[in-house]
Length: 379
Image 1 (tube, rainbow, N blue to C red):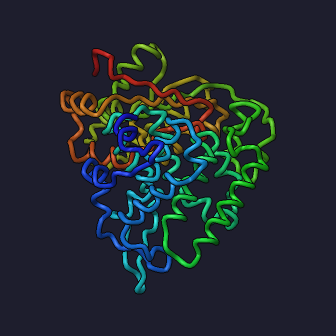
Image 2 (tube, one colour):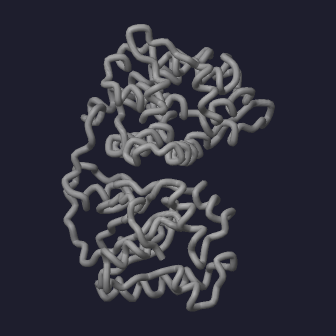
Image 3 (spheres, rainbow, N blue to C red):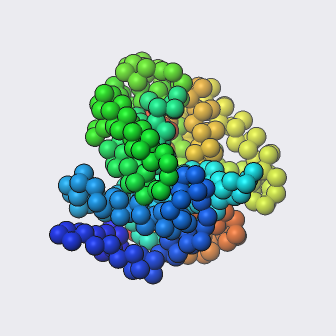
């Protein structure tokens, strides 16, 4: 991506212009003055740690040997890896904590990169690295390490995650820095033994992948028998991306479970209690699932938790699940939403954007990411 490419150091000198980075990105400036626990970060505030982590990354021979596109992607990930600490930092029992900053960082990184116009695939790779950046630093303490590294192998790359974690560790002044680097080394070895350090796990089928990520303790090599008997399409996208228009063009005549339509039928305002609407939606979905009839679940479904309610219900009836994720550039989506007869209030729209987790292939049998920015007519 161009803005990061311009700021990312290059050879032969590999000089870092930190002042230019701070001038360009408000979220980097916001890290200045945010304190950290000196037991783990005696180097200073979050901004200083980020600067040192970037310098460490740029000095790594493994990073310098990468193709330019990969260098820039990792540069962006290191800049963003602690982006949520200003929101998450608290003082408890005399110590500074930033609990949940990786999970929150995934959301913030996605929004920042979307607003900057980053290509969706590139953006999601960076967001996945930010979401998992702490994993290699405590890798051998994770009982769910296999599931995590297989997920990362599909969404980004574990060797990139290891480089990010190494830069993070080398950007710290703390007594356990060497122990952290040892953990990163063990993480690399673990991924290499599984064959997912620089490659994706080769699931036997999309159904095998789907069942692995829905079944704790499952062998990833198990070729699950595909016993699905219908298809459920789960829509996902912010208000204004054009879900209704896409459905009219691509699923004409298909039964649709629409929360907007049910709200209108039941006379429930978007700001009122949505319990009756959700109950009606699930009742209709169960009717269609019991009949083995394909249908579409049409709602914003911007968070993984929201989608999982739909996906879990479909899976319980042995349905194949595909997610259709619609996107468009920020000005386009905002203009479409504000121009609709039933526009979502701006404050509510922004709250949805703050919860936005783009769907990924660990959630469904298939995920279709579609840019609707060039589509002309929307409802």
